[in-house]
Image 1 (cartoon, helix red, strand yellow):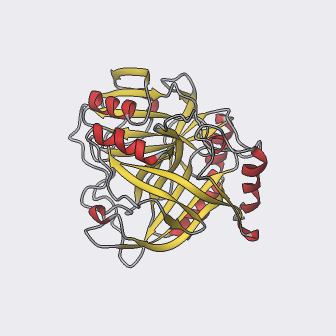
Image 2 (image 1 turned 90 degrees about the vertical axis):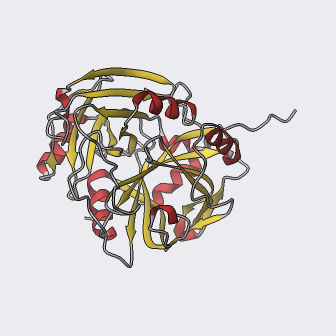
Length: 357
């Protein structure tokens, strides 16, 4: 008996980061966050992002790379043919959009020592997060804030200080409305922490001395799908700043300008995802349709806006390269919606590793 298809949110595929100089940023993230396996390296024109690029197609160069230790990747995105625009004022915790990218580390003290020894700007001491795990904050050379937090999961057990992303911090204006959105559409149905206070673990993160309603969301459903072993579990942290007049992180700027530009989820059965999103009043925008090529990869991508306009991307992946030099790719279209690919296949991705000394 054929089972009816349903919406499947597999896990966090990547966090989008707009940059001014792709090669410089790619080398920095590659070296310091071990984002070393490029799945996509593509130059082209973003023809479907018109609502967020001034109504004009945007030439761009993008690299989507992941960590051997697993977790969500980084999609490093450089607009071309125009000068990028940085925020007029530094972003504050609680501004509407993605404030912080979470990065997993097995040994937080080792990670702290590494970043300190490499003269990277550390914003806080190591402390215990609301989830009861060790964490600290740092800033990259372009002002983006990252949270390094303890996470034992790894895809390949390689000796690296950090893995990929296991979540983000998102600034919101109406906490209850946002909790409902991330629960019903993205399956973050567990409220693991919900308190209002001035929290001392933010250190020197701008806006971190303000009174916040702070909510941690987790999923009761396990990660699933063909690429789930690569991603691992995730959680989201919603932040409502009660002391400031918050602004959108991309206010007065285009999508692709420097900073965190989207949070992307790997999904299955995009039509079912669409049904749920539309019913919630968050219809798809910038929909690619069923057959979109990006370098050696192929799939269906689209976006929705959260209640504050933060862009959430959905990607249903149909094909990815496994050993690029040999022209070997894998077709994911007819794979089981819940089972991970055999590890003998996904482990072959390590042969695409790129590192800069």
